[in-house]
Image (tube, rainbow, N blue to C red; front, side, top):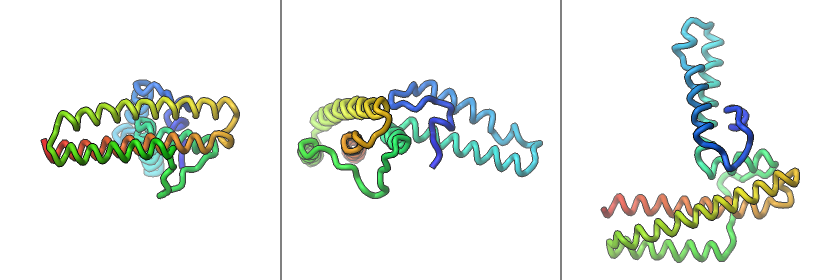
Length: 178
């Protein structure tokens, strides 16, 4: 797996300047565009295309806080196993379960105001999860690795995933009902 930070020439950090990352993506995409390499050898065109694909994937990774967190965890030596969800704190899981029940109830009642309130609450929870993950990643980087912080890092990443999943479900419900 390629390092998206290195691909875009950015310092690895969770609190990334997304505008700068997007600018780097655009600049590299322009430089690697097939029209700029039409007179190149077939091997050079393939190499430019391969690099353009890497640049696009790096941008997709870095603009998503979950994927950006996973990339930083990999850099710190913590692998997030494919198909295995990092488990957040049990109290957080109970809170999300209650929120999902409330979301389902709002859907059954076609209560748009309640649905929007739940989305607002989960966006606040998502912001808190992002801040907590950022803090844990900073601690791990400052201590030279993530071995001591691996459980906390994975728990925070799990929280962020649960928040995103809730928001995705709420969006689908909103689209269906309203």
